[in-house]
Length: 162
Image (cartoon, rainbow, N blue to C red; front, side, top):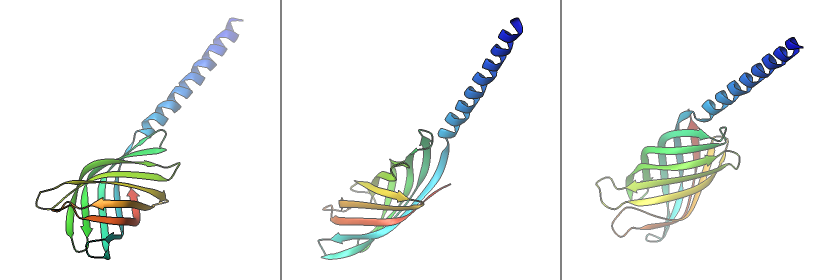
């Protein structure tokens, strides 16, 4: 009788330790950190010049997984924004989120001119498919005097997570 209780207790302990070890591995893996690079290009309508302008955005940062790897929090370290006829701007630190299940991406970035001055914030929402990504914004502003606006911004490109 005592040997059956002892065997059951040992089996329970082995089962409990196995579950605890699996949970620890899953939690540890769910909090891993990766570097990411986002490169997108596209066009936006410039109402001041009555034409479409080319837009190129390159962002680098760190991605941390949450929720068993289903969600990635994106921490932007920096990058560049190039807008035809307006020049190149810097992308400052901000954040974003990538939800793998829904294939949804949201990026909140701060844009600054190269020599200081006004700062604007872009909120970009989009979709991810594989390593491809696309963003759309109805209206964005540029960090220049008068804050020129661009409409119907559409960007497509890739996101690489290492």
